[in-house]
Image (tube, rainbow, N blue to C red; front, side):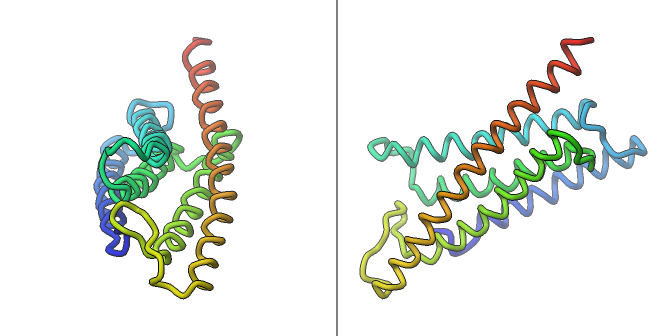
Length: 184
């Protein structure tokens, strides 16, 4: 289950490695890696791929209960790991410039990550099996009902913001390809 926080530690370690690589590139080039250069593009592309994996793979597994592609708890850990590492890479891709559509996309990314932490906290309040199924009778009925209500409310906020984030990100990618590649 998620109570141990293994996915958070793994994301933290990945963040340290990525930060070390970023610092090395900045040190040897004597400048902050630009979003439009090779290293900056690589950060953005791999970060965005992780973010897509965060949404698509976990959602597919969650909605296809007949397919047994591993335990839901493992998929949720994967969702949290990629949902932290991907946005961190995208943040580094920005070259610390937050204007225009890219700035709005970065803001949506920050909101969705914070929302994810809130959702993880609510999720851990509901006792579950390793497959992610709720265990009845372990919490008082009022507390379980309240946690379910909070989780439902959280979903109604988190999912639309995630959709807005991905629409914004796809528009950003399209615009970057158009203006930086096709017009040259």
